Length: 436
Image (cartoon, rainbow, N blue to C red; front, side):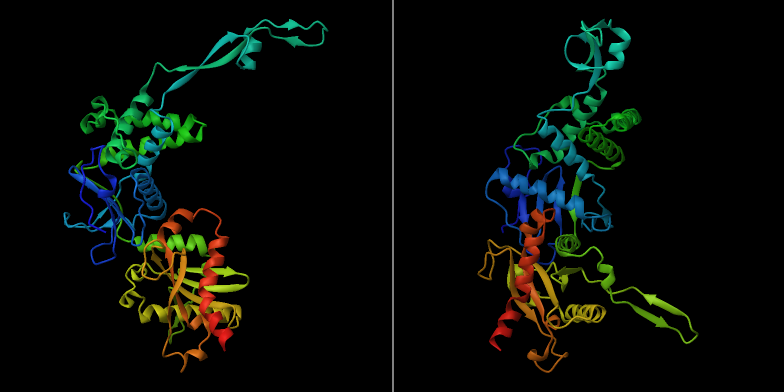
C-alpha cells in the first residue's frame, strides 16, 4: 500500500483513507496506532489488515482499532522509540477517556446536560410517596377501607442552573473531537469558546476534579459515571502534559497484542499448568527454580491438546519463506509438546503443534479466502530420521489467520473458530494418514 500522507488534523473534509497505512512488516514498520502533531496525523494498521474503500467504514475501522489497542496494550507495550526524542517515551495519552467522551457526544447528539430533580404537585407523574404523605391531604375511599391522594408530589427533571458539569463536558468534547473525532466522523464541532487554555485550566483544575468526583460518587447511571470518569482522566492529562504539539497512541510491539488476541480466542485459562520448568540443584544442597518456558496458548478441544504459538511474522503477507519462524522457535515448540505429552499421557492422536501468523484473506499469495488456512509445516531434522517417524506434535503446522477477523471476533463465542483451527491443523496430517 502506498505510504499514507500526513493529513491536517482539523480538516473535516479530509479523505480519511489517505491518512491510513497498513504496515508491510518491513524494517521500521512496527508501530500500530495513531501519531499526530499540529501538522497532521497518520493511523497505522497491523500487517495483513484489509481496509474498506468508503469513508464511513474506514472511520469505523479506526474506532475499532483504538478499542483493541486500549484493551490489549499495557504500559510496557506503549513504549515508543521515536527519532524526535532523545530517549523512549511512554505513551500516557488516555485514549479510552477521549473515546468515551466522543462516543457519548455522538450517541446523544450533543453535550451532557446537567439536570436536577425538582418536585411539584400534580395528578400524574412519578410519585414520591414519602413527600406525598407528608405534604398532601389524604381522602377516605367510599368503601371506607382505603386512603387515596387526589394530588401527589411527583418528580420532574429540569435543567440545572449550575451548569458546571455541562461546561466541563463542552471543553472535553471540543478537545477530544479536535484530536480524534475527525477520525470517526466527517464533521468536527468548533466553538472557540471551549478551546482549552492550559494556563486557565490549571487555575480551575481542582474545582473541576472535585465536582467530577462528587458526580462519580453520587451517580447511579453507569453510562454517565463512565463519562465523568473519562472527563476526569482528560482534565488530569491536559494539565500534566508538557507539549501540545505531539500526541500518539499505540505500540511498537503489536506482537504482544497478537499473542493476547490468540490466547483470548483459542487459549485455556490455566495454561500455566503446561509451562515446562527447570531447577538448578547446587552441590551444597540449595535449589533454585528458573523461569519456565511459556507457550502462548494451550487449546483443548474434544480431549485433544493443541500447543499454539502466536507469531506476528509477515510470512502470511509476503509468502517469503525467510519470514517463517526460526529453528529456535521450532525447538521450543517441540519442548512444549514433550512436556504436555508426558504430563497428560497423550498418544499421537491427541497432541498437536501450530504457529499462528497474520494474513489477509481478501488479498494473499496462497489462493484462499478462508479466515484460517494451513500454509506450511516445520519438520525438525534432528528429531527422527524420517518424516514418517515423527509424532504429530513434532510436525509443527504453519497456520495463517485473517487479522481483521480476529480483531472483530475476540469477544464472541469461539467454538466455530476453534473447530476450524482444529480442521486446519489436522488437515494434512489426516490426508497423509488416509493415503498410507
